[in-house]
Length: 386
Image (cartoon, rainbow, N blue to C red; front, side, top):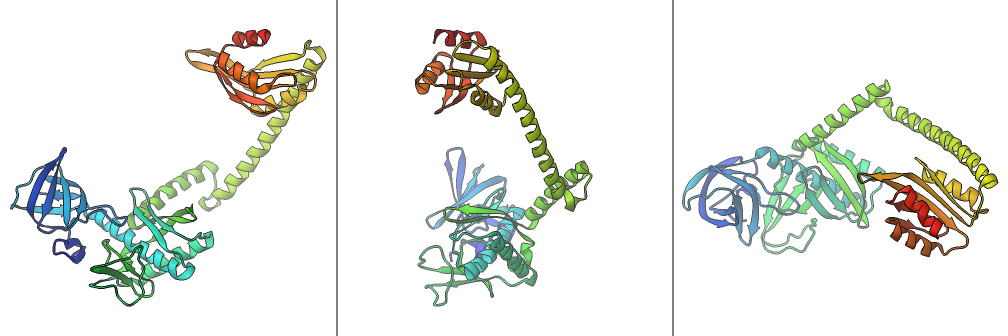
């Protein structure tokens, strides 16, 4: 371990005296190298620290070979020493989530043979990718066991080895040189390059807010500590608002919403049945009174189901049935949805031609569906010419 990396030896250090070795302008910023640093550089799924060196704001830190580059907005004098500090709340958040990831990954590996193949600390969520598909029951079990480890307040140990140790440990890749091993007794032993807490109790609550299949395995979305608390508070506020709106107790809202959804579906079914009845009556009139072998129908606010109903009702009698629903374009707003079928014309040729001449799009086999940006009289004239 390089003496430059204070963030490993003193992960709880918030400020220090920073001696500048070099400061190089690049683009609209400055690349700064320090004699030693507590700023963690981005790597292993963990974002870099941010903070300040003197009056210079550090927005990003990265590795460049053996050097650690601090990206700042102001120049610093080489050889000078400055008061420097990191944004501690950000660092502590990263430490909480990184230590939580070790617990979850260690448990998943032992119970389900799942390897951690991806990890990322983002602004909204922390993600962990496993190469095994995990069920809802597996996820609940992982969450419960990892929170048990939090309550135990177990020490998180960090050790360095010049050669690969003889005991088993998790690692995403083959390692050489000095190897940093993070251990939580009974839960995990893993090669790691991130900053860690000293005890599991500092993680706070571990909450898997969602999960899903991802690249043949599973992706977990994780929140800990203050992030988990803020997430709970936001969801609690939403739940209380829904509870008030429904005049239901908070823990009964799901049942109320389910009931409302069922009532909505029943009303929609009744409404559709009524609309079908109206279409059927209108269709009967067309069958009795309409002359010719082609019928063109215009109505406003027809649903696709109603348009299909017209097609089904009239296609046996008429060689062409075209149903248009909408209104003429005004100020760029408007147009007509269409459903069209034909028993004596090549439908694909007809639709291609109509879409071209009426500024439309759409298609289909048997019955074509689409949209035209045209006026009613343009549509009527097109079918008179056909």
